Image (cartoon, rainbow over all chains, first blue to last red; front, top):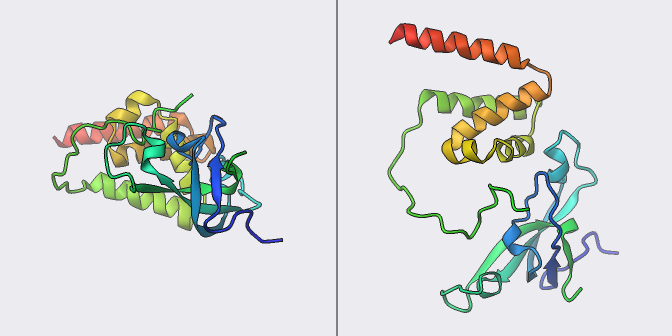
Length: 97
Length: 103
């Protein structure tokens, strides 16, 4: 089994949950689909580090590429514009789920 | 519910691009964070961010970059028991008196 749940190029969907606390997944990308642009590595979970815990086990951090038009319905720039957001593994699911 | 700091993509108005020199206190706050996190390891950058996100919307909007840091660091040091709120308040009062005397 691979060390990481998703591979580069794979289509993923951001979870829509809305917990309180220190969350590094911006609300505007939640529920949207993008593709894994790169795997950044594994890092202690910042949601835990923010409360003095060790953040272990480390979570895979992915850089996910979204189409601007999919995030912002009224986006007026070129249709091929994209935005990349670094998102931790526990916020992602396979696309279509 | 969306927190007040999670404002990506919202209209932000004009961006002030004037060059801005840091004050001495801002450099000191920067140094303090680095000493407390990397050297003394009594707090993390993630805790600093959590502190900033819980300053309350008014203070978050009003304070500039290092003002947010200073409030967050102070609250964390009290939360962790390294200083008491009373010690912090007394020290702020001492500094205020010293500053007023030097004016």
